Image (cartoon, rainbow, N blue to C red):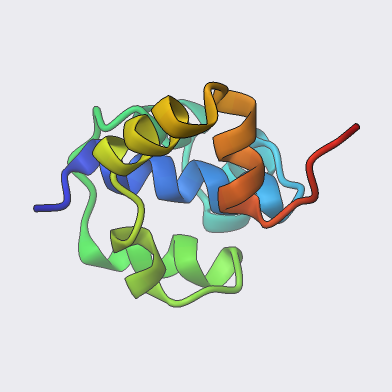
Length: 97
């Protein structure tokens, strides 16, 4: 089951991949910066409309917010041994040498 924290983590990853700050995303979708912070931490009761606005701003499909679970992040972190490695895996970046 996908939790609000899982969705928030997926949004955070997509936002960072898009090169946006929380403030920039907030301005784009016309919400307070604190709202983005709370969403990313799983501490906000958002509407489906808000999720669609976020997805549109991040140029992605809303379904992409339901694919990254905190459990999966922990599993990959245990395998790779590094949270930075898991971020690179999720963001599709090459490992820096």
